[in-house]
Length: 471
Image 1 (spheres, rainbow, N blue to C red):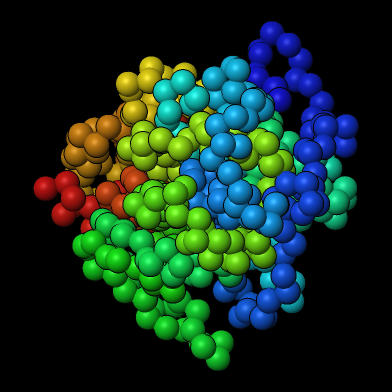
Image 2: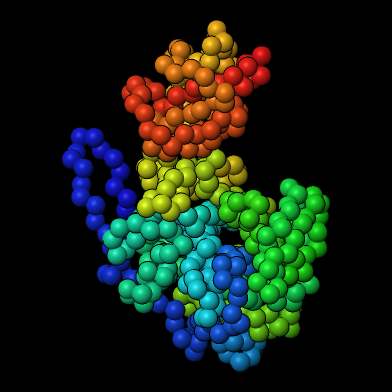
């Protein structure tokens, strides 16, 4: 586990995470559970195939493919419902009240650079007693400890584990257990080529687009681009349309994309339930043709049957989702390591993520809200970089209404500033607050390092253009 800070103890030496002695249970062969080989697919445009499509994994988890799985394993549907309800297997974590999964999405294209990057990483925790589900999306750029030692982006951990121990899923599992401090015995992994086919087999999914989207840089034919646009409203999306909706990120962010992925997960599950796939094996058999080539899990047959028994009546309204991001309540900030953009927990304290997850999973059953994240106000000093008397004080008064802690107002040693400039004294650890401050003032965040008092986290030097803000 990530060691929590204890000021009474000396700082321990960092050590790599335990992985070689604690490998995740391997994918098993087709004649035991439901492991399917990943097929070789057409080469995609470089840089464009990293769609995170764990999108149908929760749909499978919540009921899409059980009949299809039985057919794959036995060659016949037989009396599958009898087998389902006679199953006495207990899932790991069930007796303690929660069954945890990690959901991984790989490009799945053997001829493509980055085929083993898991650009979608979700943790799903199912509350057995209350029939509720928590989803946590871990961003691909999160800077995380890896089993072999050191740190890397989260999306590279699977590939590192495959290269070192032929155990990519185990490496990701170890990493997630380390930073979130929960046990995750199961995983499901999928590539995105089957995504459009599954949705088309279901007859499309209904999605409410809450925020308009326009992306002129979506990968198109012949290594070019195409425009993808969605206005606000409710859509019935076929596979290709849903793929674009889930994949687009150039004009939004990976965080927005993760939210759209969670949205489609639930739309898929709802459509599967509308079609009553548990009582319509013919449709499930058709879906099998897609899943069998693009889906892998370490659940064995009896465990999968037990899971289906637990979630057959699951209400999709009982889902609480969280995307860790760099918003004020998102627990992360953006920075650079070796000139590469990464995300880190606020104050570089990974226990903040674990505490959030623990609080979310221990809330009362009738409380479907996420725990509130409280970030202390950014402590700033406001300096007058102009010859306009009292301008810094006026700006400070306005900023105090935006929940910033003004610790000092004074004249700057250098005058003649036209536009406001912000100097960071947190080493990027409060980047989201700095970014918000810059947006409010129309200021630039300087990369210059200056010496500031210990109780000051940022300095604002106001410029002549700040008069409009102050008045």
